[in-house]
Length: 119
Image 1 (cartoon, one colour):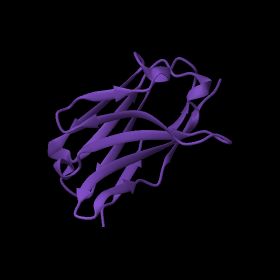
Image 2 (spheres, rainbow, N blue to C red; image 1 turned 90 degrees about the vertical axis):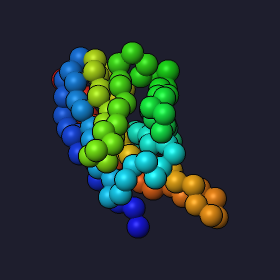
Image 3 (tube, helix red, strand yellow; image 1 turned 135 degrees about the vertical axis):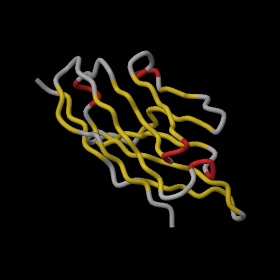
Image 4 (cartoon, helix red, strand yellow; image 1 turned 180 degrees about the vertical axis):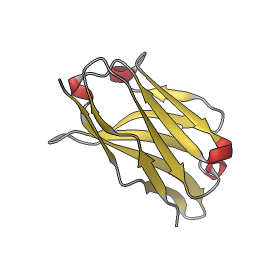
């Protein structure tokens, strides 16, 4: 069973920065895409950023120019650098990976890490 372990969340003031990390229990080349989602209280979980095997990134409009997703294949880790944070970025952030298997696509999720942006 794939395990994804997030770290790096916390409390930060508006305009500040945080870097989230997601360490996978297996070679991240096994996944065709890795991503970060977030869920704020009372809202649906939304995709924030993703990166595929070719290192092609995707960003939600709300974070473009502020967040950067990257991967370290040697460490089997994906990162989310978050700059110029806003109160509306407050949410639980989840790491996600997708793998093609014989039956289709398997989704894996981390346990989530809380990010709170407040003065």
